[in-house]
Length: 83
Image 1 (cartoon, rainbow, N blue to C red):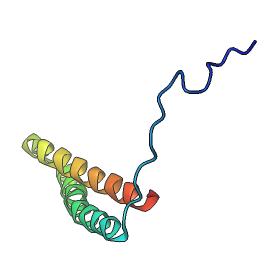
Image 2: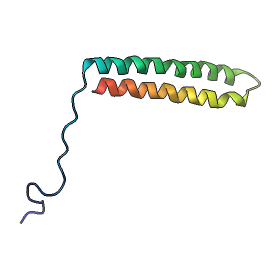
Image 3: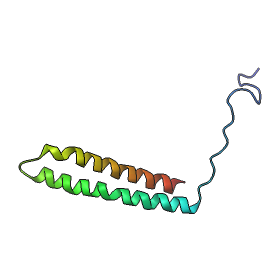
Image 4: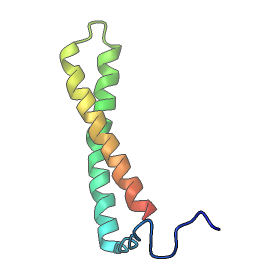
């Protein structure tokens, strides 16, 4: 006797995802690259803010938001290139 369920019973079959076209991949890479710009600005301004002797904590939320947007850009580019 086998412990596996007979064919047709058990887990439902999931159809494979549709292939993505080249235009959508290019669009995702372009948008991801645009999203990297706020992350780059957040790194620059965050480094400048931390190097100042008097750090303004009011900049912290803006720096964090910029870093999150930049991270979203990296993830979008990663998803586009992995296909």
